[in-house]
Length: 429
Image 1: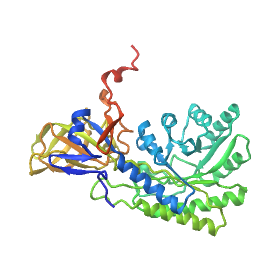
Image 2: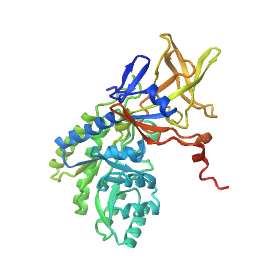
Image 3: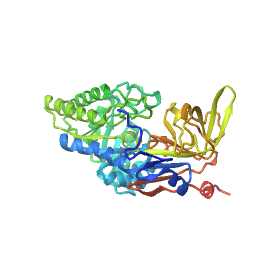
Image 4: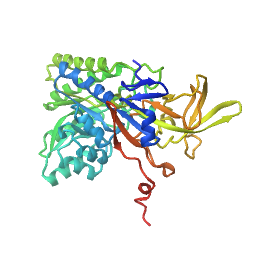
C-alpha cells in the first residue's frame, strides 16, 4: 500500500493544494522552510484504528507515539479523535498534560526516567512503563514519599528481530529497552504485593518502520504465553497488554507498506483466540502508532536558493533548510519523495538536494528526478510529518521552522517560527 501524499493532495495549474490551501500562498504567508500538517489525513488515520477496534475489540486504547511529532495543537487534535498519548520524557508528558488528552490514556515510557519525571507522572496518576529494577526502586520510594500508588506496566523483551534499521530495532534481546521474562517476573510479584504500586500489565515494542507482518503475530503469541505464566506462577491478573507500534509507511513509490487495518485486526483476533484457548480474560489492548498516524499528513516546503552545476556530476539544488529540520537522511539514510510546486518547464533532470548547513553530509537526497529546477522555486517534500519536527535542531543557530495545520481551506499556526531573539534567550551574558 503506497500512500505518499496527504489525502487532500491535489495538483493544480502551477500549484499544489493540500487541505484546501495553496502551497504557494502558504509559503508567501508563513515563509519557508515550513512544516505543513493536513488535519484530514490525521483524522482518517486515527479513525482507522478507533473504528476498527470499536467493532472488533472494544476494550482498547490508542496512545499516539508522541516522539513522532508533538505540540499542544497536535495533542488536542489527537484527543478530539479519541486518541491518547505515549510519551518518553518529562517534556513530552508536560506538553500532553497541558492539552486535552485524557490522563487515563497516557503511557510514560523510557529506559532512564529521572526522579523528577517519575514524580510528575505519579502526581498526575499517569501509567508508567517500567524498564528496569533500578527504576522500580525509584518509583517505590517516590510513591511512598507522596503516599500515592503508582500505576505500573512492565516492558519486556520479546526477543523478536524485526527487519528494520539497526537503530530502530527495539524488541531483540540485546536491546537497551525492557526486561527479559525471568527478570520481569520477580518485579511484577514485588509490585503486586506492595502498597505503593498497582500492577496493570505488560508492554512490548518490536521496532519501527516494519513492513513484515509476521513479527506482530509472533508478538501476540509471546505476550499471551507470558500472561499465562504471570497468572499461573504469581496468581496475578494482567489487565492491559500493550503491543507497541512501529507500523511501516511509504515514503517513496518503491515502498510497499502493509495495510495497518489488516495487521491490527489480525492481532486483535489472535489475542482473543489465544486468551480463550488458555482460559484467560481478554485484557485491554493498547497500540502506540506514531509514524502511521502522522507521517503521510506532513509535508515540508523549501525555497530553492541556487542550482549549482558540477562537472560530470548531478547539479546541486540548494534549499533553505536541510539537516537541522530533517536529520533523518543523515541518521537513517531515509528516502523521501520530492516535487516542484510550480514547474516552469516539462524538461526533467536529476539532482542532488542539499541543505544550507556547514556539513558535507547535509544532503537530503541524491539522484532525484525533478522538473527543471530554478532559483526561487518552491520544493515540497512528502511524508515529513513524523520525526522531522521532533528531531529538528538549532544547529548553526538555525531558527526552527513554523508548523501550520491546514483543513478545509483554513490554515492555523501550530508552532511559531523561531527568531534570532529566541536563539539567544537562554545565553548567560
